[in-house]
Amino acid sequence: MKIFIIAEIGINHNGDVEIAKQLIDVAKLAGAEAVKFQKRSIEKVYSKDELDKPRESPWGTTTREQKMGLELGKKEFDEIDRYCKEKKIEWFASAWDLESHEFLRQYNLKYNKIASPLITYIDLLHEVALEQKHTFISTGMSDQEMIKRAVEIFRKVNCPFELMHCVSTYPTNDEDANLNCIPVLRNLYQCDVGYSGHEGGIAVSYAAAALGISSLERHITLDRAMYGSDQAVSLEPATFIQMVGGIRKIEKAMGDGVKRVNGKEIPIARKLRSHIPWEAHK
View 1 (tube, helix red, strand yellow):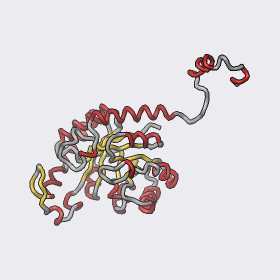
View 2 (view 1 turned 120 degrees about the vertical axis):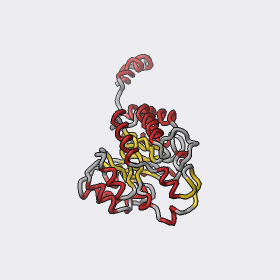
View 3 (view 1 turned 180 degrees about the horizontal axis):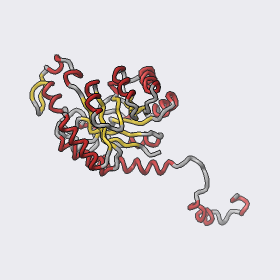
View 4 (view 1 turned 90 degrees about the vertical axis):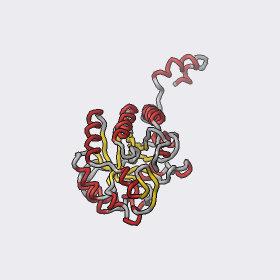
């Protein structure tokens, strides 16, 4: 099964649709199947007290100005929708509130995403599941009961989904990645399981691919030194392209697990075993 690779743009566009388009180009060049964004209704996701706090950013001196500066609106998402269709790459977004989910409906996207913090947002889970679109459910900050409840909501209405093993630390240390959760989740919930990674580098993602994940999501950026909380845990273009190429090699290398004599081995076996009595060849 081919791994569905998602380039997580998130908010790494810094509110600039031209940066978003450059990142879409990177994802397309690398061979990713989709790009993903995030959508928030700022006044609903954050409290007034939080938004009024002082915070220096390119957009002003309060958290409100920073959050609003990072948020894309209809004009920007219209252009993203147009550009992804032109480039022939899927796009979707994780809605952080019910209003944002309703906003995204206008684009008739093929996929939905439940971000890790939202797996306990029951009303949102119900609304997403009712759409009957294939949904990626990240499991960072979650225990088995939280995941079970989400799975039950999606199964009750026969909405297709897959879980994504995730550890919500930024960056995720190698010793915290806990990749053995991937087969455990697959067995517990009898579903496909992907991986959403926040680690530095690509070695852990390669290991996840070898464990049979169905999807892989990694943040991408034009430059890790750019402004933004997710930039440092993101992959720059060359590294993301390298990772996708490596994943495709791993897929080919995994094979079917049946031990047999490869036809290409036969002439080598004849040469290297020529001194052995023929009976021993059988």
